[in-house]
Structure formats: structure tokens, C-alpha cells
Length: 381
Image (spheres, helix red, strand yellow):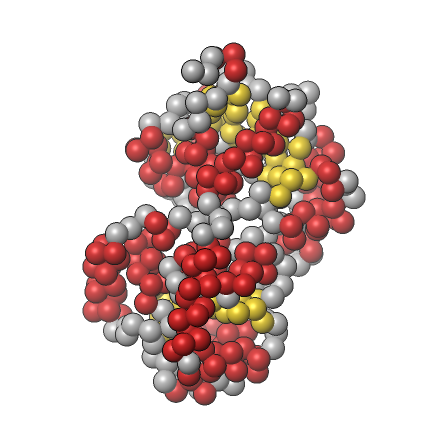
């Protein structure tokens, strides 16, 4: 039995839960909090009264998280209203913690005299988009926090270089995905039947793209590559899930690039539908020019969906030997890779097996255990 005095009290800031209903960071912290909640030596709290994160609400329904904030569905001005309400809430109730873990880079007052841990997701804004708005906050965190967590070796390397800090200030804690473990085979097949009927999809005959498509996400790279691929005449379609809403101008541009040979479907999908799409795709493609981690390739591998991934930034760390790595700015090479995969059932079977093996190396439990080690280290326990 762990005594109260032996527990570590960890307070998570409410930042990300105040404006992100769905998204990678909200998923990460919801999973982390759920795992830590189950530890007998933990006392977990979230510094918020109200939140709009659907992932956190799902976890709270099953685990009854201690000190969980109240959930309300996201509305248009949630990003302004909820932080204001939560600031009032913090004034009315004060909770002492041993470690504060920030779910996003802190904007307001921070008590740096207590141990603060900050997770860095990437340096995309500064390195790729040439935006420096977050740089002063990141620099302050890098200098004043008790310790920093990076979600990949790539992110850590960029932090050390761009923030001029010792590598010893940063611990890499990889993320994970349990999407392939959350649904039964029957429920996935039921969702697939609905997708077949609604969109006219055929199993094994579409390319899957998940997430944003603009800028460094490089959806244009896939469109260009298909212009070099023989298999575009045999594949039924490209399926896109998530990301920004498609603009008519962009859609027309994509269709011109594919010479109207290959339809593009933009499908709104919940997690169950996404699981069905991963399970029945010919392959999943990610040609991003930069990623702090890359959960979608990991999700795809978990379902045994062959992966063609960019060889840039953190993606080789995630995909490893579980997928095909390629220069995202080499359309001919990508096109050849699609053809090779399409023309060989044995190659597809090999990559399905390799991907599942690779995905098994990542887990939210591992993420939680390695994060807990960071807390113990900063507290000297």
C-alpha cells in the first residue's frame, strides 16, 4: 500500500483542453493522464473547471478521473470563454502539487520556483514556417523549466540547436497509438460496410491520406507522384480524412494534376470509421516535409496497412523498418514505389507484418512510465 506522503502530486495545466476538442496533443495528454491515474503512487489533477476535449471526456466516463473538469461540447468562442472561466476557478480553489506539467507552452504567469515540466512537440513554426511568435515562450521554458520532454529525437535535436540548450535538459518520450486495439473486428467490419455503401469504396483499391494537406504536409507530393504511377489506372480513388476543409479551387487543381483519372474523396470519419479505412486501404501515404512525431503512420501500421512515408524529420524514427521510406519531393520514386507495392501481393503482406511488428513497440503505458521517470528525476526521488 502506497501512503499519501509517498505519492507524487502532478498537476496538468488545462490549456490544451480549453480549445482543442480533437487533435494530437489532446489525445496525448488524455492518454497520459488516464495511464498515470491508474498508478497507486500518483495523485493526478487538471488545473481547469471546464473543458471541451472529447478524448478526455471519454477517459473520464470509464475511469472517473480525480479532479476532472466538467465537459461541455466545443462552441465557436470556447477558446476565449473557457480560459477566462478557468482563471476565475483557479482563484477560487488553490491546489498544491509537486510537479506541474504544461499541456502547451504557458502564456501567463508561471511559478518557476516549483518544478515545471514542459512538453515540446516540434519546432515547425520556427524551422519550416518562419514564424517566431512562440519562440520567446519556448526559450523561457527551455531556460526556466525543471525539465523538458520532446516527443522525438528529431524534436530534441531541433530544440538543442535552436534554443541553445544542453541535450541533458531534454528527455525523449515517444507517443503511441492504441486505435488498433480499441474496436472489435465485427464493429470495424460494420463501419466498413457503411463506408462501402456511402462512398462506393472497394477494399484494397484506394490510397489513404490522414490529416492536413496544405503546406509542409505536402499532399501535392502525392498528386504529383500519381502522375508517374502506372497503378493510378487500376486504383479506384484517393481517400482523405481530417485536415482543413477542401476549397473548390484546390479540388480543381488536384483533379487537373491527376488528369481526372482518379477520384478524391474527402470523408468525415470518427475513430471507428478511421479504423475501418486503415483496415481496408491499399496503402497509407504520408509525405510530410516535417513532423514532430507522426501518429497517423503509427496508426496505419497498427492495422497492418502498408505505409509509404517521408524520410524527413521524425518519421523514420516512427516508421523504422515497418514501412517504405522515400524522399517526399521525388514524385517518380514515390510513383515507382506505389507501382511495386500494387503489383506484388507478397510485398504488401510483408509490409503488413513489418508494420504491425513496428507498431507494437509503442504504447501509452510506455509513454506514461517514461514520463513518470522524468517526474521522479526532477523531484530527486
